[in-house]
Amino acid sequence: MQDKTPLESFIHYKTETGMQCGNYQIDLPPLKKGEQYRFHFDMTACVGCHCCEVACNEQNNNLPDVKWRRVGEMEAGVFPNVSQLFNSMSCNHCIDPECLKGCPTNSYIKFENGIVFHDDDVCIGCQYCTWNCPYEVPVFNQDRGIVTKCHMCHEKLDEGQTPACVQACPAGAIEIEIFRPDEWLDGQIEKEGVAPHLPDISITKPTTRYTLPEFKGEVKPADERILKPAHAELPLVFMTVLTQISVGGFMAMFLGTLLHNIGFNLAAPNFWLALAVFLPAAIGLPLSALHLGRPGLAMTAMKNLKTSWLSREAAALGAYAGGATLVALLYLYPMLIGKNLIDPNSFFMTLIQAVVLLIGLYGIYAQSRIYRIKARPAWNRKSTTGRFFGSGYIGFLLTAFVMLLSGAERSVMAILALSLLYGLYQLYMIYEEINFYKHLDKEDPLFYQLNRSRILLQEHFGRLKKTRLFSLAIFALMLPIVAIVLVASQAVTAAAIVLGIAIIGAFLSEIIGRYLFFVTVVPLGLAGNFFAGNQR
Image (tube, rainbow, N blue to C red; front, side):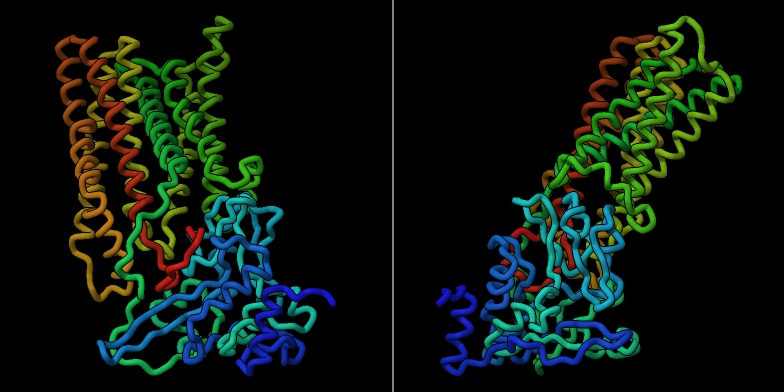
């Protein structure tokens, strides 16, 4: 006789001892047109045993830290009249899934039966879906280098069997049901699709139906006193800052070209300047591949231009890098050949640079929109876009430095004047963030997550935050002013040294700012999720 698996032995034990357990066979008729499957979770029955988690992991051969189903714990009332609540949640197989819309490789498929399926073969492990999902359902499998998630044991459903979590639940708290999405959205979801401390149902329109117990008092997550920084995402820290510097520098170069060509007494840009503003993007863009679980498939990140901001960013910044390379080569050509391929002072050269700049600006805008997602409230603000564009002031400092080495002091004065305005703008963006957290509204439905981000920023990383603020004032404002005075005094060498220090210091300041941006975000997620494992 073939040995039973641990799951089968456990269910056999429950049956023999009289314990209630889920059914093997699904007691549902075949789906009719317009009908779909969904989970039903009975919170009044769940005892928090986590058998569903174990069964799910065993069924799908997942490692302990890769959980497709998780049990959250909550508490209500005041001692001695307290209630303990559990919420066993896997994928909600949403009607409007954010994971599907945001995925750059079209790895998500919404089946006709309602299941949101993940195609592992085309996943590049960018983990963007783990940010987009307000329930933090997709989970990164580090060993495989891809994201994986619950698929409602679709192969069991095809054979008329219930999913592993349903079979393993000793209290029968998890069931599979048939429903009609149109009826669910027409009033039912507001009554039976919500549970304490779950994200706003309007984000993705989840399909899980809840049966809730009666409880008194405020419901609190059992892990509310546990607060950890989020992943630092260092490859993305450097990639975003470097690409923003590059686009900022290209903007300064374009303005120089434009002003020179319409008659202002400013030096024309040259190959060395074009190379200097291109290099940050050339270094930064490959760094993004280090964030991927399968970097060899990085180029497939541009497949979903229709709905994914990540695809749009990859395509736009890739095109920008190609355009910046073309501009640099057009400046290099006469140095190698002895004659111009295109006159640097011509309208055509100005037009080329204008097109490249517009593509780059759109790339940075798309880059900011990647992070403006409802599942991460601290990121989902207009100031995120403002700060991403604000980092471009370093590109102006870099342009001024290269022009100073080229002997174009008059041009340096103009560029530094613009960099000061740019730096002031970035300083205002930082002030806006401080002011935002200072005036959080306790009635805001997102107060819990935003307040935890505030605690991380002001208490856990308070010193680093002050370093960021003061370094920005020094390197973006004070040193450029000193450089302007030195240039006006003809102290070119001293001005170059000051500008070099300002560029390095400003870069480090922006790196600190971007690091804080990543580590202080608090996602919506599942309340009381002690055993999150590898969830991001």
